[in-house]
Amino acid sequence: MSRRVRSALVVLLALGLAGAAAVYLRSDSTSARNTAPRPRPPVVYVLGDSFTTGIRGLTKEQAYAGQAARMLGWQAVIGGRVGSGFAEPGPAKQRFDTLFTRQFAWRPAPDMMLVSGGHNDVLTPMGQVRRRTVALIRRIRAHWPGTHLVIMGPTWGRDVGAKAIRVRNTIRAAAVSERVPFIDPIGQRWFTGNRRKGTGNAVHYIRADNIHPNPAGNRHMAACLVANLRTLGLARPVRGRPATPSPAATPPPVTAPTAAATP
Picture 1 (cartoon, rainbow, N blue to C red):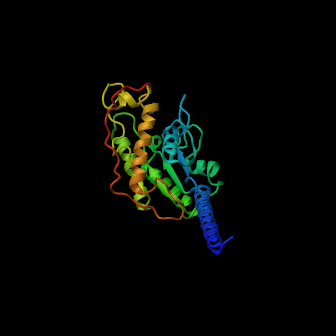
Picture 2: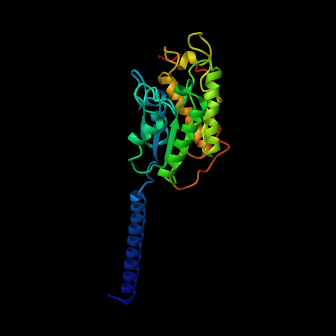
Picture 3: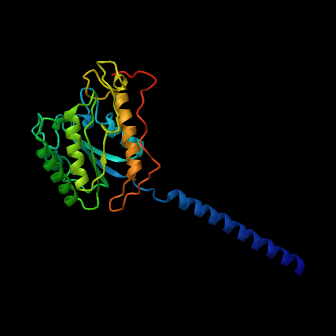
């Protein structure tokens, strides 16, 4: 074999080895990307009343918090009791602070906790409602430092009166005093009008009881909640990491749906 032929073979062999190495490196890089751990879903706890837990044929997974969890990819734990409130114990004789102890306090710290209610507190003295709300906020913060906390005021499925406004104002004042983000379904008019009077979006979104949202109403609530959380920078909360508010993401306007929903 001539020297020229041997030299050509050496060059071809080197080129082949280089090509094989490049293919291996590309393959290894792609494999690393495919096997890289994905970010874990946020862990979010939600405490509330019948609007949160579901009622009469509507499970908590179908209620607004369960819907929002699916929309945002949360790992959610949803708790509470029908009839309970910040100060009102309801039929089960359990206020939100008692429910927090029994259903949540023993769990690992979440990325965020949402406490939603007030509808059942309308007949309780407002001074007591405010004290209980502040106490619950401080307790959650002390128990889970670094966990994001959001308070959502009462949801009203029919015409809003003076009692509804008063309890909303009381809970909002407590949240503001503790520097906790407050979401206001009444102020943002998530529901309007009165189903029994045939007015507003309540005709499409509220059950026959004229209080609670039907499946379409819960989907509407979930969309409104998600819009608020995006504005607050808490759609994907991470415990110990500051929220990143997005002023451009504003809650959608409340409009009547184009098709009627089944209660």
